[in-house]
Image 1 (spheres, one colour):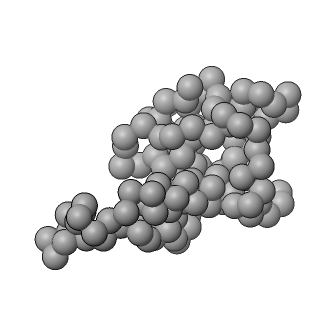
Image 2 (cartoon, helix red, strand yellow):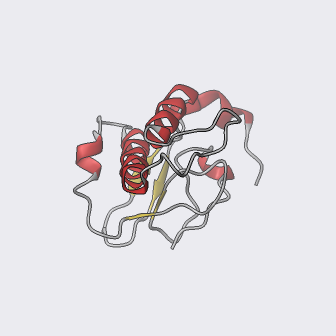
Length: 134
């Protein structure tokens, strides 16, 4: 189903309930704003060293540091997406049940997913997400 004008105009006020494996009640989630997405992207790339041409400089990039930055970006993304009726901090997301968060598929639009039988992304409008959930 195509995204509607109403969904677009609601921006971050557009929410959907998502059933997440391991929890009895659904999560209420919203998409990220462009500003939030830019912040998440900055966190994810924080420890990545680039060459002048923009490609990753693997010789000076520490994989462990990049992995930590990407995990922090996932926690930040989910904290924004869950901040609907109350504010969630990345530290709150870190204490979710193990396996609630899953690594996203390789996609330029989807940064993080919640484990659920539904298709949900906290980066794109929820009804248009192309990510798959496990």
